[in-house]
Length: 128
Image 1 (cartoon, one colour):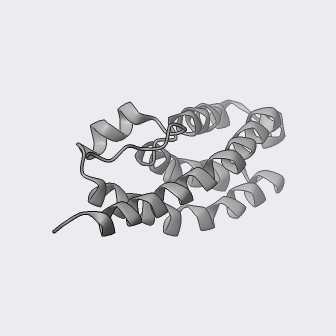
Image 2: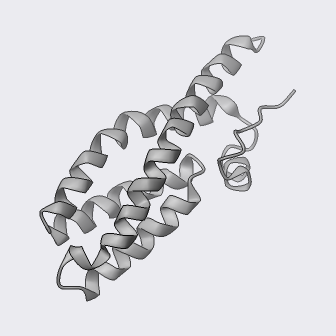
């Protein structure tokens, strides 16, 4: 039986990236949680402080990770916000888009954490 990712994640992207190897997926999901989750409060702080350059730099740094855990919707929204940073005076003009990202993060980050736990259990249950 091959590993099946949760339906809330982009299966096509994950299958393309991991070619059916849940051990690699487990490592990437773990790295994402370890490295990206702690940066999210900083992203919100930069937004609230209207520190556009730091906000844009951090979005640019973390957005690829969302592809690697199957959250392509968040990646796309972050890409759009990052692009708009060049043409705005204040981050507050991105409030609706940013709040949408924050809402999605609230919904989807638990899915990523649960997926990592599933991947860990799957690897333990496999012979070898």
